[in-house]
Length: 103
Image (tube, rainbow, N blue to C red; front, side, top):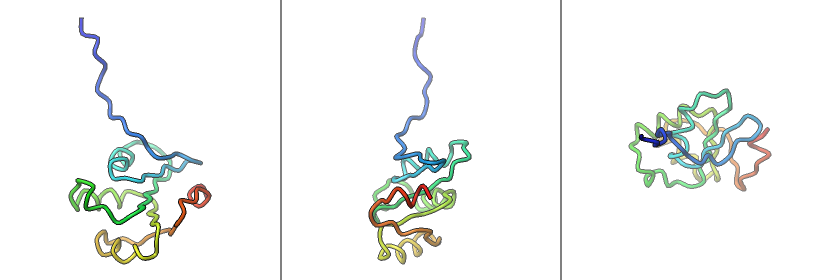
């Protein structure tokens, strides 16, 4: 008798607050953008380290496109972000202020 469990994707999403899911890595976002939910999807990019994510540019751009909001930590990150992803930034949140995500 085989009692093995079914394989299910498991990830640790950084947070779900007030019907808002916040991703802080592309690994979280790959899973979170595919989950059927009515929650708002927010990608909080702490640093400009997307080249180390292990994903190709097309995949990363697809993920960013599926997010309702993109939040960066610094105004200095806006220009490189726009240049790479071709998308504007919605919020600058320097201190991971949760109130800005919730509201």
